[in-house]
Image (cartoon, rainbow, N blue to C red; front, side, top):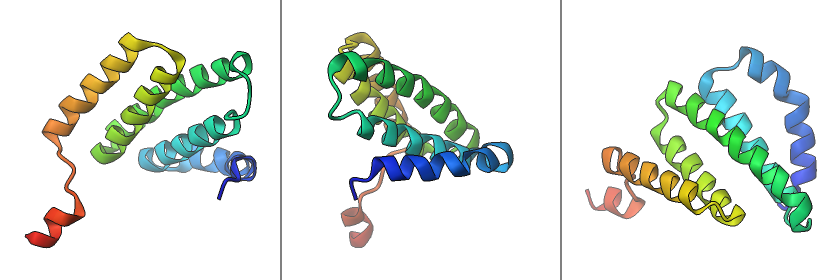
Length: 122
């Protein structure tokens, strides 16, 4: 809907109860959505203002991945790793991007994502 400011406001209001009483899965989803909103808000900012926000989002994604690992939500882990690799690429951190991509590939080989077409055929 292209309303990251309103979404970020709503997330901030509801953050405390979810982070204090929510499950690892819910906490991870909240922080992942918060990260995506932060990145979306900086799309029109210049590079000098955008880089610190992207770096904090990359660090927050490490926490998100840990929370999803605790919940054993492998599809969400792969999604967060992919997003983290994209942010590293945007920042120009090639080795970190490649590390994330390698971890994603390993996780994808262990837990492949089934697409809807293969589910309909079976």
